Image 1 (cartoon, rainbow, N blue to C red):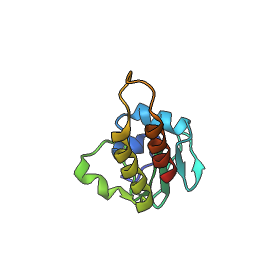
Image 2 (tube, helix red, strand yellow):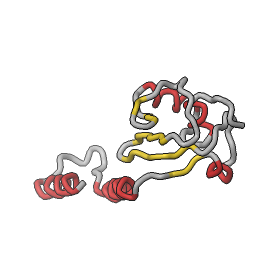
Image 3 (cartoon, rainbow, N blue to C red):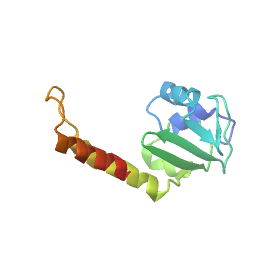
Image 4 (spheres, rainbow, N blue to C red):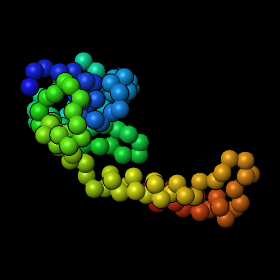
Length: 126
């Protein structure tokens, strides 16, 4: 089970990306790092590596426990990967989701002066 497997295939197998193509593209864009170094999709992770995946506005951190090349059920993922994302990062995601309620509908015109100040205050708060 601990045979060498490409990072893009591993990311797909442990359900961090919906398709292997998405995992490959994110590696090519430099959004996937192993121990702080951007990786190519062909890189082989090792157990104990720290993998960071940047999905705006959060950078998720994972520890490799085991290698697997076939996609597995969601209940079995914890045997191969450990989520070590800091709580501060998850708080950014929560704030961004709360801020989504302040988005304006397309075509409603320019924001008023008060709307602009509210938007700026929320963006500076991050």
